[in-house]
Length: 588
Image (cartoon, rainbow, N blue to C red; front, side):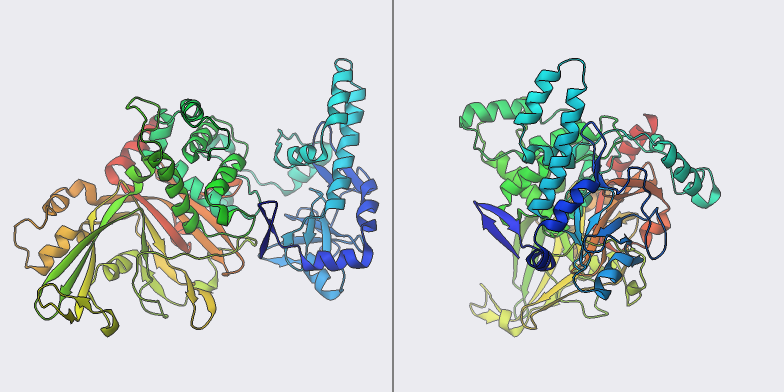
C-alpha cells in the first residue's frame, strides 16, 4: 500500500513502528543519540556504547554476521542472516513489543517482524544531529578555511546531510582491530576450495556492482544485463548518444527545466561510470529518479517486477526519441531508438479457418517473448506477455529444493509457443471467405529476429477468479547456444506446406540467413524466494566465464551454478556479435 503526499508516492508506515511509537513515544530514539558514533569526515554512522565495542549476537555469539541489530526496547544484540536464520526475528516473535531494532553498523531502523527497513523522523534527526556535531568539530579544528566551513555546516539542511550520508561512498582501510578479524576469518584466494572467488583486479573491465537503493534489486539485475549487452554497450561507449549534446539541444528546443528527463542520457552516464575502471559499487540513483518520472505509477521503494521494469525502460527510451523528430542526422545526437534497434523483432500470427483453409496473417513488433513453462504442474495458456508484482526484500538461494517439482526446457517452451493451437468456441474468428464465424487454428512464429533476444519465463501466475497469486518454482533447462531457425516463420511455413521451395511473403530470407539464427547466452536474470519475498540476481557471461552480480557484490561462479539457477529472463545475442565482443575483451 502507498499514499501520495504533495504529489509524491510514499510507502505505508510499518504497523509495528506505529505501535512502538504509541507506547513509548520518541524517548527511546533520543536515548540512542549518545551511542551514535560517526567517523569523520562525513562517514557512516554506527551504534556503539563504547567506541571500541565489538557487537556480538546474544544467541550465537558471532560478530561477523551480515547484519547485527540492537533491540531498541532492551538493547540486546541479535544477528539477521537470511535465508539461513534470523535471531533478531526470533527475539521479536518471542517478546511482544520488541520488533523495532537498529542496525549497529549503519544506524538504520529495522523491523524484525516485517524483516524490512523502516523510517522514523525523530530517529533520523538524532543521526543527522550527530553527524552535524562531528562535521562542526572537524571544521573548527581545521587550520585553513575554518570560517567558511563552519558557515556551510551551520547553513546546511539536515535533509542534505541525510542524503549525503546514504549515497557518499569512500575508500575503506581496515584498522588494527579489523585487521585481526580479517586475518581470522579470511581464506587465501588461491585455495582450491575457494576457486570461485576472485580479487577485484581480476574482474573484467566494466564489471561493477550496483548498490541497492531500497528494494531495487529488480532494477540492478536488468541494468547489469543491459550494461553488458554487446550492441548496446558499443553504441553508448562509442558516443553515439552524447548526453551533453542531447541535454543542450533539448534545453534549447523545449525552453523549460521541467521537461521529462532523458533515460538514454542517464544510460550514457551510467555506461561512463561503470566502464571508468572504478571498482567501488555504483549507485544508479539518477537513473532511478528519471525512470520514476517516466513511470509515475511505479515511483516508490516498493517491490517491482524485473520484466515490467525492462519493458517500461525500453518504452521510456523509445518515447523520448519519438517525441523529438527534428533531430539532424549527425553523430552523437541519439537520432534513433537504440533500444528497439537492439531488442525489437517481429512476430507473425496465422489464424486459419478450419472449414475452408483461409488464413489471416498479422505482424506485431515485440522487444521480448514471454513463454509459459511446459504443461506439467499446471502452466496456463499460451500468450505473449505477462506482468506481475513481486517482492525483493529477502535473499534466497537459487538452488533450493522447491525446484524439483518439474523440469522444463527453453526449447520445449519455444516449441509450445510456435505450435498451432485450436481456439475455443468463444474465440471464433470471422472468415472472409466463408463470411461467417468459424472455428480456427492459431500459430505463432518469429518473422524477424532481433540482434538480442530476450525470453521472459512466466513464473508468476495471477488468477482473478480465485483471487490468488502464486509462483511457479520449476526448474528450467536453458542452453548456452541456441539455434532459432526452427521457430522462424520461414521454417514453420515450409513444415506446414511440405518443405516446398517458394516464397511466403519474403520469409525465405530468414531461413537462408543461417548466421543470424545462431544465438549465444550472455545474461540470465534469476528470481529466488517466494512471490511476496524474493530476490533478483544476474549471471553474466564475459569471455566464456560466468560472474554473479548480486547488487553490490560481484564474483566469479562455475557454469553449473548458472545452469541450476531459477531463470526468469534470458538474454541471447547473435553468435557473430558475441564472439566479436569476446575477442575484443580478451585482447584488452
